[in-house]
Amino acid sequence: MRSALSLSLAALGLLGSASAFPHPQPETEAVLSARAGSQGKANAVKEAFQHAWDGYMKYAFPHDELHPVSNGHGDSRNGWGASAVDALSTAIIMGNADAVNTILDHIAKIDYTQTNDQVSLFETTIRYLAGMLSGYDLLNGPASGLVSDQSKVDTLLTQSKNLAEVLKFAFDTPSGVPYNNLNITSKGNDGATTNGLAVTGTLVLEWTRLSDLTGNDEYANLSQKAESYLLNPQPSSAEPFPGLVGSSISIQDGKFTDSVVSWNGGDDSFYEYLIKAYVYDPTRFATYKDRWVLAAESTIKNLASHPKPRPELTFLSSYNNGNYDLSSQHLTCFDGGSFLLGGTVLGRQDFIDFGLDLVHGCEATYNETLTKIGPDSFGWDPSKVPSDQQDFYEKAGFYINSGYYVLRPEVIESFYYAYRVTGAEIYRNWVWNAFVAINATTRTDSGFAGITNVNAPNGGSKDDNQESFLFAEVLKYSYMVHAEDAEWQVQKGDKNTFVFNTEAHPFSVKHT
Ligand SMILES: *[C@@H]1O[C@H](CO)[C@@H](O)[C@H](O)[C@H]1NC(C)=O
Ligand SMILES: *[C@@H]1O[C@H](CO)[C@@H](O)[C@H](O)[C@H]1NC(C)=O
Ligand SMILES: *[C@@H]1O[C@H](CO)[C@@H](O)[C@H](O)[C@H]1NC(C)=O
Ligand SMILES: *[C@@H]1O[C@H](CO)[C@@H](O)[C@H](O)[C@H]1NC(C)=O
Image 1 (spheres, rainbow, N blue to C red):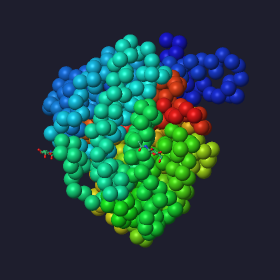
Image 2 (cartoon, rainbow, N blue to C red; image 1 turned 90 degrees about the vertical axis):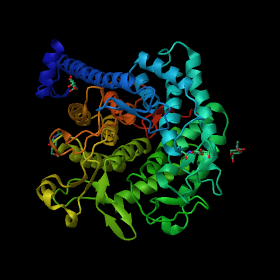
Image 3 (cartoon, rainbow, N blue to C red; image 1 turned 30 degrees about the horizontal axis):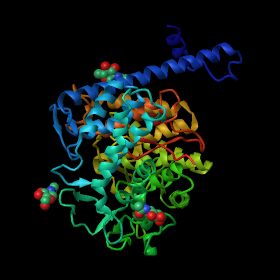
Image 4 (spheres, rainbow, N blue to C red; image 1 turned 180 degrees about the vertical axis):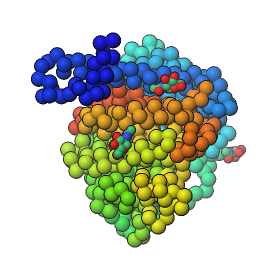
């Protein structure tokens, strides 16, 4: 009761900073009540995880994902139990030993040599390989003690190696730029002649971590050879602004085949991994950091864009041969988090400030809709406003291109970085608002479903799919922002001991 009372005082703004209340008593109360409040919120996120986990176990396990409306299941990720593997690091961080043990028993049984489906090198790396490596790092590190049978933990590394051995033929190309879409039975591919920027440039953390844990540098070498073409882009026209590069690369010779620049889906996590690789190992990845700094400076100078009706908002446009495209995506909203991480690690206040501008822009995409959830894609080009959205655009500063919300994490993820880097309560409140809205609008009897229109009552209709990243990302960032400090949490400055892959799986950084 005491904490409930002081909570309401805090909510009314009656308990302020130490300078407003010079006596030690109220300050202690405020701190205690804030903590009690966050514990309650952290527990509410645990409840949501348990709800989704129980539904997945009942109706879908060991398939890849739950169909949360029909209570059926799907196998969109090769049928190896993607939701289970993707949920592992979140279950560990939440201290959910039951779920962790179930997942470890499942992982020991996966045969990564068998699937009837085309295998995506990128998706398999960021969800399965990273999920297992992260579990290994957490259970051998700050979460040791959660699992009593160490052999189950060791199996995570054995299975990571098994999976990489199955996948590594992808890099066996004339340039070393991998094929992304693989037939692991025939060691074949889809016949593509180019590979994308993000799918080529979002392997290096996972494959390097695997090498560092196994002592076999083959995996690191393969991923870094592929990345070398992205760090030294050819021809020079593929780099229209310093550090900002085109979006597709020839598998034959590693040259870029276009010069379309963006931070949107297809390009996004290439930029994300430049700075995260540096956080992982500042010695080996110093060049990656230099490239990220160039890209970040060019982005502030050339891609930052402010919608006419609300010039205080900042979005990122994309660029193609002299033309700017004034549209962006939910996926792109990882950008604020990337600037905040780079800014705090490198001590660059200008990057932190710009990251917060991006965070505020993405918050507007949530704040302005009927459901308080942001759309999958949006635009702010005055000449392209749909006639039925003119009023919305004038008020919100953007119009909706796709009103879907498919349980993506990026906006909450960047709120999380904003909170960890600045300590300002408002960002943690934004995470909570988003979580409450997602829980209210997407929840079904067995889990959470994508919705078709964030700006319609009840989100329009439900799309009967629960992506595995609901477990890996949405619920993890929503939980961690309210949870106690821990080794795996993002830290201010250059003191991080973990770094999160693009699917929110934390790896131990390389200790030098
Ligand atoms: C992979 O190749 C095998 C052997 O050639 C073939 O039977 C199978 O249909 C292929 N799988 C896919 C998903 O294309
Ligand atoms: C990996 O690259 C390093 C540096 O080029 C080289 O010395 C090493 O032999 C390579 N390892 C493998 C397994 O190819
Ligand atoms: C929504 O945005 C307005 C204006 O930027 C701000 O004052 C308000 O706090 C925001 N509301 C929420 C719930 O985030
Ligand atoms: C989430 O939804 C469930 C079911 O409606 C509800 O019981 C729970 O209180 C909600 N959690 C929050 C934090 O709103």
